[in-house]
Length: 293
Ligand code: GUN
Image (cartoon, rainbow, N blue to C red; front, top):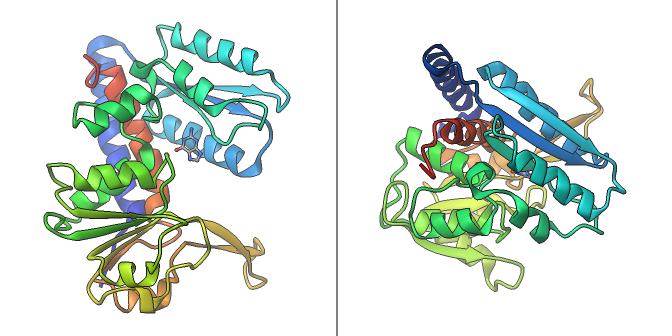
């Protein structure tokens, strides 16, 4: 069984990015710059955004964090996005999700200039990805694609089952795995809350990508011997034996699934760190005008 090490792979990518940043700085004096907008005080969102800002520092990027109160109006948020759109020094813009209920995620996403949409959430980038054009691909699916590539996982002709159809992970993942290219050329089944016979479908998967958001949902009996299993979930559970009082688990029951899988991502240290590396990579691409020209 191969343990797919997202922590090490993301560090490799960050080293590659840092090297490129030093080159651009020396040649053009330009420093890639990511702006993150954080609304409200959701604990997980704070943790994620802080990790993104810290990762920017690690690779030599500039970063700007715009914090807005939870009761900010939709109009004020749209104005903040517009200001960043118009700031020539900023290459990438992300608005951390979820947003408070009174704000339309669709409206805010659609306000982001596609050329700066390093999260790959805008209709323009989703469309471009679907057409197999140069695009910013959402960071989590992009990170998974990079893991499959760097671990030389065969995908052509394989049955890839994706659990979960969110706009952030499952839906783009299903499109990427079905694209004509590598990784891709898989026969894809996208499953969701209305899917019948899910365990049976999972057992037919050569590649199982789990993004359902339920702790230890996938058990050993749902996995075909030799399958490749990618776990996108991350959940805190109480654990008195830990100093922090908790430990992290995924959407996959790791021990029993690892016994059957040919390769598997752990939680933590699998997909999570790759998401940040992919976001940094997209921002570098933007600074180098590689996607939209
Ligand atoms: N919330 C959960 N994942 C993400 C992500 O990749 N980007 C943003 N902006 N918000 C998120």
